[in-house]
Length: 340
Image (cartoon, rainbow, N blue to C red; front, side):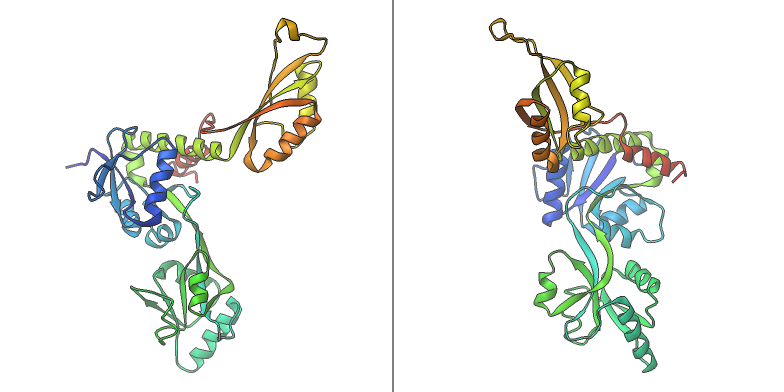
């Protein structure tokens, strides 16, 4: 019997779970999970959508096999678990949290610094009848990376527990593992190769391609989610800035603003005349200017507003910035139609 509900899988524990819950809440999709011992929850703003909590690796497998329609997991696991499969469609590959990298790392005492050095080491071991051994939990993407750099012969060694100890106990020659701060590598006398980064990773939203293609209700949820995620990500990095500016006309003020790199707004400034109280009226014309400014540009934007005659600057954080249609949704439709 065909499944009628819509399922999204979220990480079941750790920092990725709490960050995913916080992120969805900020996007207007707060997860209602009254019993933390249960592995199911709901999203009141998405009726008919059931939340399932799973391990990050299982999330990718569930989306790949179709038992889950959507999932949030790290790009490292998505690349590994969906290797060679088109069933998993990335909808948003930069949710902005859970950053790390997958790197090759060697013992500090080993005189290998680059991938070229590693390839030479592998050849030397091969001439002596031995494989270069790499301990990793990411065999697919690691093998692809090694092949691209001409490393041979090698043997990938699967490890269930801690990877960092593998070279010290002679279980492997080096490791391919996730790195955040690098402290764990240093504590275990390991160092990453200078060009040995296999991939960058952060939290991503994925979906089952067939569900999007065959179930209109799943496609509708995808659009809703991408709409609010994109609007939140745009808004969270921006401020709405309002200022009073002296000038002869909106055209004259906007011309000055377009000469400044940080106060041009999204499509341009919104300018309207200020109607002063009778006892404050004078010969000068005042206009209210509204623009959207990126967070990193705020200081320069205020400076430039003052340079064009602005005063009384008010800065308000943006919650959402909605565009006509989310770029990620357009990309998803193109991918589903085979145009990407």
